[in-house]
Image 1 (tube, helix red, strand yellow):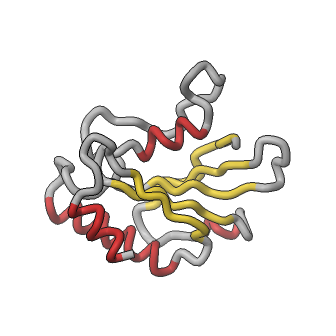
Image 2: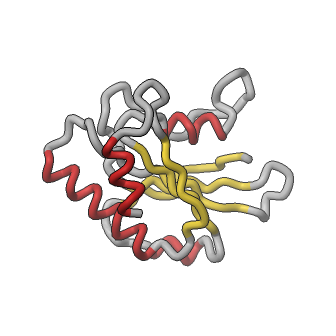
Length: 143
């Protein structure tokens, strides 16, 4: 897989860009703050281990730096016509953001989940050293 570019960071309900990418399936990446969602996207793009890929998703040292839905266009390595979107979401749980802002982020993600007719898969990133937390279980139940 090759992740070609960051399409859009979506803060509101503006899905007009969908018209540019018809029939493009999506994989939503959910997880707690600092659980490795952006690192996963960069790893899939070959940014580590000398594979020649680039870091396309911003990886913050502090928690809670992703505050929008970020859409990345990915295409099949051999057949560029096969493409889809990876969707990086804000983390939940232990972020340094104010509670009202975290609630706003979760409403945005929930609305996307409710209307995300193109979602083909949801990946839940869990921090290996913490295991599945109560917050992870809550998210799984809400999905």
